[in-house]
Length: 387
Image 1 (cartoon, one colour):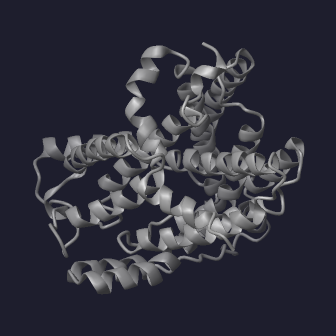
Image 2: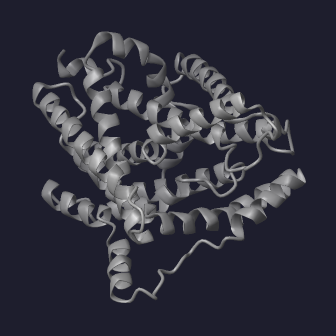
Image 3: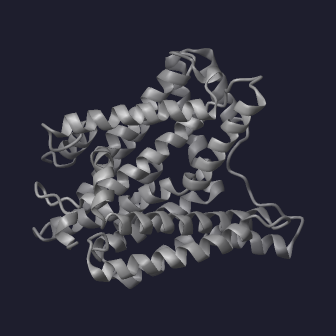
């Protein structure tokens, strides 16, 4: 297949990227439904069979997508920046001022999403750390790769590890206060929407931010943005023979690295910062497997056909990401339907699939008469509003 087959005839979009983004957002959504949007309430007293099914569903989903679907989302965030910057540069314009304004708008969308998601929003993190792309925008591909690796190597966790080896009595600082999430759950339990929303966008955002610092995502995110920018600049998502070789090599190397790092992160007795390092590296390696496999399969007609829905889903990724939080809170939280105590992991997964199917149908209906999604259109108009 030629590279032109991965482009939309209507607006020259790379539909492979739309489908991959849709895949990532769908996986994130299903994980959120399984987790009840970090509302830790589940049925009690279920049969051993149901408990076994629930655990199997949770284990499979977390093995395949936890930390990986987010990484794909982050890669494509950087990819989008590179494409938008290049498009404006061809017109003799610098996109940076608009990008900073765009990140402020994303911060506001993230705040809206956070109102329905106790301590779990990632859009605010993207809006803040995405600003790293501005001062690095003029670096060459090699320069971007070097800076990306500096972020991804987890230098802070390496420092913590060395410090603990030097002084075994020393402990790394923990930013996340253990009281944050229980306090958020208490407010959600109350069934008062306005109190919950306020707690989510204040205490919840602090909890999410500090968790990202403790878990290594604060540095991982900009590293992934930069890798995505490299992929965008190099046109690695077009279906050329050279790119097929690149992604084949990526698949093989990622598979080997994933195995080694899975063993490393599972070792007993290693310092917690080292576990964080291996976990972050493992997630990136596994992400390489998912992305490379998806890109290679997209060269085949039948795979393009079965991912048509994901293409629409990815075109409206912001709309779907925010709306799944709103829908999920309405389904699981006490202020609305309060189904959390009645839905285990498997049941929540099925509910998530139904919601995803309905979202895809809505996307296809909406895009039949609109060029952009609901929130995407608002974001675009606000981005390019006249100063």
